[in-house]
Amino acid sequence: MERITEDQVAQLIGFVFARIPDATSLQGEARRVATALRLAATKQAAAVCFHRASPPENAAGTELHATASWNLLVAFAQIWHDHPDFPADAAMETFEFDSESPLSMTEHREQ
Image (cartoon, rainbow, N blue to C red; front, top):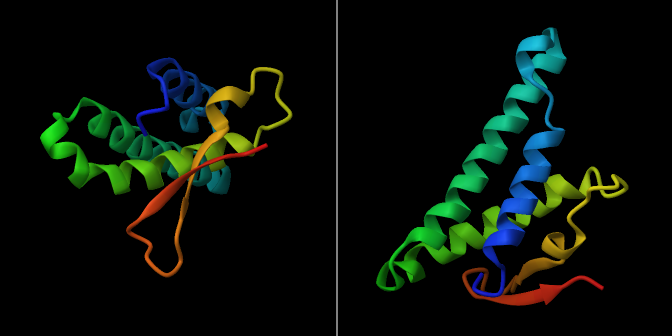
């Protein structure tokens, strides 16, 4: 997570939230979907921001959750990958989890 800059975090989070419609203007299933998407994105963004604001001695305990949350935010952003404002630089920074040992992770840059 250290390689991800504050600017990349802000770009990706801002991009995702800008694409999720305001639920108050929607009805029925569309409203529920928008509400769920905003809630999920908010929780993921909070985990990333919490980890980045944690003191170094606590960072090890929050890194796995923050990494998984970052990957989910990237997946949300990928929905709109063809949008002209797509934050490609931020979305490149993802992490792979070892299926044998999911608590260890390796950095991965999509090409």
